[in-house]
Length: 522
Image (cartoon, rainbow, N blue to C red):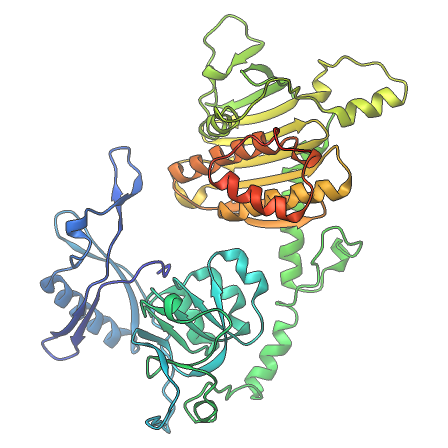
């Protein structure tokens, strides 16, 4: 459904006694299993099993009979979800309309036997009929979507559900893997975007910027813009655009879809600036996120019940355990040792912060920005004040971390538990002791590395926001470990970054395992 892999395809003739007419087996590199810890895990598939069919003929024929009965009962083709248990029993989980394209009464047959343009891709599955043309836009990671031009032919390794956010900009879609029963394919049919999935060679044969014509019904992609095909009756057509139904729908959607509240820092981003349902959702979401991070802005709030953390990093740090995040193994109830922390996300971050390649000697973890404000106004205050400390609110699988590194601060909010769909990481970084140009360079560096780690990244001036949603526990732990390394490696980098070339170089070096940059030439 997610379009990440090519499925096994078994074609069965719809007869009184169904029969198998064709089988195509996809390569399976991973499998989901139910582990002894009562959770599902993703594990590799042994080489001798990667090309085995996931379903034998007897079960396939039984499912075909179910499908025919369901289609007869509901009076239309069905998208069916099913499962087979370890004892070999089949279970029906869900049946819903397949959302196949409607067949018009006047069937149109198109023949393109005289096309001289070279065929760049042949084969795959037609997920949505039609013909579309444009320049190839290759997707390697989700952040590429921000640069997608109008009318592009999207070419990707898989038919990710995330691509639906740009479906209205596309003239056609071609992918290496995927299924016509996948989520993206269903949305493509609703929008009428010609889509060809499971070609196996799209990203290899269709270079960035190449003009191509996609003939989804013919399962072919032609080199160049083939005008004859685009002007044919089989090309993509919007037959309902000026119908009474569509006029009424556009009127209704004007109160639902348009998003006017874009920038939270704009004076118009207020409750009475809401103009649509989309605005309401955007406004509520942004304010909820701000409230969640509000603890990081209230710098002089002392959290009750906090214990001073003793670790090998030179820092003033307090933790608040809200349930299962630590254990008390020594007499001093006002402090907690790092060895006593059992919070999964907290341990993962500190594993990164204490990586052997990160040097902490001579560094003092201190909120100089707040200290300067007090000192310059004539105040006297101890450097050990909790006002300058970093804080962590934690439980066994949750962490809200507020870090003070000199003149900048970091907020990290994460869940790392057994339910992959509930796991997430939210990251915010702002500030620095250097001038704004160098702070912007460090922000570019952080954004580049977060993007390479799979985060959705937003950057406004020297403020960097990163968001990662979903993922198995082991993967989230690894990401948090990398975040820890990132924080340790870049804590003073705004002082010696010089230009964008240096930023690009350091992104590569960090991803290759370099975490100490203080020895660079100034």
